[in-house]
Image (cartoon, rainbow over all chains, first blue to last red; front, side):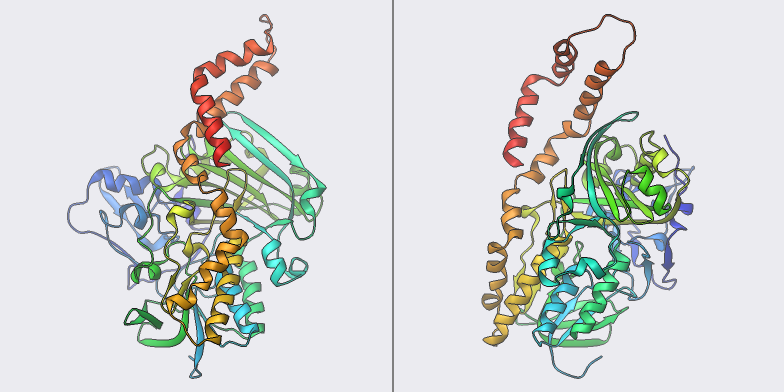
Length: 95
Length: 430
């Protein structure tokens, strides 16, 4: 089975990251592992990670704005999900 | 923004929004279209292919000037396992008849072209502005809110895509059910025009569309796709959101697995990855449709859930055009009576009911449920096809068998009862 280099994959895309304002924020209180694990699998940008020590890692910067995480875990993992502000976020040159 | 009175505000510059704007502006209505990306198409993704019949009716001859990629002349439907691929390959001149042909397409260029058409028709387009909310008074939508700005209009069209936060905000949509949407992830792989012609047996300007069941979605609900563009390949997977979230392989891993598959790798060899994109697909059919009419508001395109996935063909952009056409006509009638209430705008629903969009959505209403519950399609059936064909084609010196002896044991593995059930139910829904 193939390994994925997600950074390389996302480096193909053009992003205007909103550094001041995260458009996706995770809950700060207890998030169930099984819920988080769903996003590890379903997020097409691989933004929901678990590092080698089992610690959760999330960065909104490579978001492709599909909304998959909101549909699956809008109530269980996410505190906030909105589209990035106008002009910001991913910009598809092919689409 | 403009001080003039606006008749219609459209949220979202995809095919639905731009087509609606184009039609309304042609009728003399003042239209403001607001797009959150820097240009129309910058947030949009297709598999993809557009069936042209519906836009052809509105803009006759558009295929000659629009930035379409290749006319699809070769259709392939494949059952794929981890090391094998069984295809039905259909080439026909009949696929290319004017008015019923389809093209591979990339949305960034196509939507910008449609944006120009809409602007030429008189639509005022503002890009780079996100609409945060709608202005609602006594249950009547009166316009939009973007940051500090408020803009009012007689009617607002929500064409803000599958994940329509605005339709949810005003209660028309109850939100998306993870069982009813799929996530598509796609890579654009650059290859020269000649290499694509050779590898896919296509003449210049002509191309192929492949859909896969089985391996691309990791044996779970979903599939894979490959479309030839002029000088690139669109290759990707589509997975039922709930099902993939309970699986083994992640969505990006599934894309990589497909690229590395022995039946695919030689086709993209030497290609350069140009873009990686993802989008939700509203595959739930009629049961997932939100309410699409309210006081002063209409919902069109993906935001209304207009999409058909039949397994061998996927439609969405053609339906977006039809919904835009019906919405524009309903608004035109509402303007004549100066009545933008829900009752008056309900002409939209009636026009849709009489259109091919709703006729087809109703005809295939059982397909989404069938695809979701018939899990054998994604694992057992691709395996069955490969096992049977392997027995037919592999000659290894062991005593040969009659065809019946080759096939029956494999069918038994699945069970005749299951086979019969799936055939009957598939026959009924498709």
